[in-house]
Image 1 (spheres, rainbow, N blue to C red):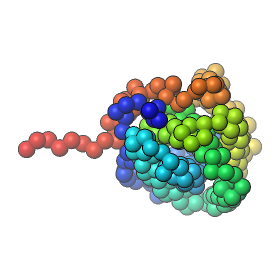
Image 2 (cartoon, rainbow, N blue to C red):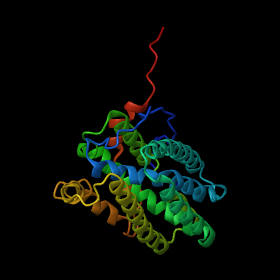
Image 3 (cartoon, rainbow, N blue to C red):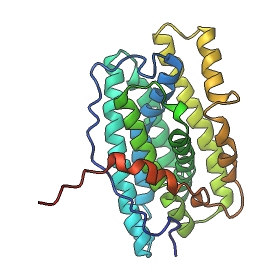
Image 4 (spheres, rainbow, N blue to C red):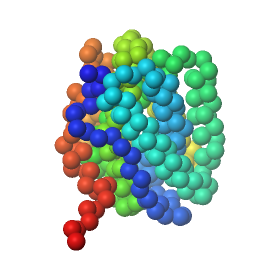
Length: 278
């Protein structure tokens, strides 16, 4: 079997309306600029990044014979396409607040164009599999740890939970496609190192821009508290280190981190209500 996704798990897009407020509160995450702009900076990267993920998987769709994996590819493309649209709307809200989102987007787009021009389709797919692991462990952390969104306005909290839920559902699809068409662990590990660097670099650069626009770039208390919240003893990122490093182990696949219980816990929030029988 080519697919490692647990049997019976459906991967399908949920077409939801999040009614993001306009204007978006500048510091929607409990009034905290650090927490808000960490999420904001990641979000700005998603529309172009997820279109890249779709393209990299789509290049190999015709080489997949397993009907289950082919159906999961369809679901993956649908979910990522919807994520891209919702985060583009999120970016537009940030534009309205005066942040230079266009420059952040153009930098990401230029790197993607370079990657698509210079890297083989296999390397592009390896990059997608690696970055999907990063988003999967971030999603797992967000769903497991209430501190990640504690204090956020309801619309934004719901948007991020929805995204985390669907990232968890399709976390193995690109990885399984990669194993079918290439499978080189060396290439995959190199892609993870490069992908990690640029994800951290681009997210940090976006955060710095937004904090500068807010006049808070040199506020040492904000940085002290923010770094404690992310990397301190109870920090939201600390528990993710082991899961991140698992990617480099021989024989790793994403569903070795089995968090189906989280899907069961959060799925009902995003399912349409069942009509009562007449």
